[in-house]
Amino acid sequence: MSAIFKRDLRSYFTGMIGYIFIAVSLAFVGIYFLVVNLINGYPYFSYTLSNSAMFFIVCIPLLTMRSMAEERRTKTDQLLLTSPVSVGGIVTGKFLAMAAVLAIPMVILCACPLLMRSAGAAGIASDYATLLAVYCMGCMFIAIGMFISSLTENQVISAVVTLFVLLLLYMWDDILDFLPTTVTANMIGCLVAIVVVALLLYLMSGSPNLAMVAAIIGAVAVIVVYFVDATLFESLLPNALGILSATAVLETFAFDFVFNWPGLVFYLSVAALFVFLTAQTVQKRRWN
Image (cartoon, rainbow, N blue to C red; front, side, top):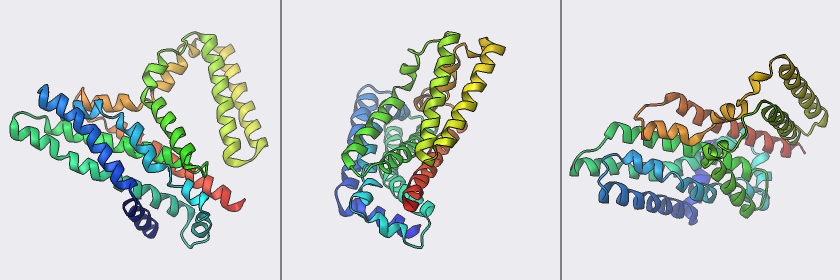
C-alpha cells in the first residue's frame, strides 16, 4: 500500500494536477478570506471556510478524475491487479495519496487564523475545528470521486459526473425542501429508493436474482408498514435524507461553534464506504 501511496503522490506533482489543485483551492479560499475577514472584519475564519466550501465542487473532480479512470485507459490497472498488493491496499493507497494532496492547502490555511489573531480578535478554536471538518468533508468527496472514476475509463466523464454529484450534495438541503411530505408520496418514494438500491446491488454484484430478491423483500416490507401504520411515512423521506446533509455538519462547526464529532464520524464513515465500494468495483473487474 505504501508503494501505491508514494507512486500516486509523486504522480500528482510530476504533472500539473497537484499544483493546479493547490493553487485553485488557495485562490478560492483566499478571495473569501480577503472579503469576509480582512475587508468586512469578521473575526471568524470559520465563516470563510463555510462560504468557500464550494471550491470542493470544482477542485475535487480535478484530483479524482484520473485516479482510477487513467489506470483503465492506459491498461496499467492490469499490472496493479497482478501485483502482490491486495485490491483494498491499492485503493486505500490511492485514496491516501489524494487525501495527502488535500492536506497541503489545509495546512497552509492554518496560518489564516494566526494572521487574524496578530491583527486583532480571532476564534482560534472554532476556526481550527472547522478546518478539520472541511478536511474530513473533502476526504468524503474524494472517496466519492474515486468511486465514480472507477466506473469509467474516460477522465472527462469521471470529472463531469463527480462535479454533478458534489453539486447535488452541496445543494442537498435546498433539494429536500421540494420533496413532498404526504404519506402516499413518501411511500412511493420509498419504493423508488428500493428499486434504486436493487439496481446498485445488481451493478455491484452482477447477480439479477440477488437484486430482485432484495427489491421484493424491501417492497413487501414498505407495503406492510403502510397498511399497518401509514402515518409513519409522513415526511419520512425529507427527514431520513436530511441526515445525509454534508453542509449541515459543517455549519454546526462554522456558525454554531459546536464540535460536532458525530458529524466527523459521518464524513469518515461515508469516505470508508466509498473506498470499500471502489475496491469491490475493481475486484469485480479483476475476476471478470
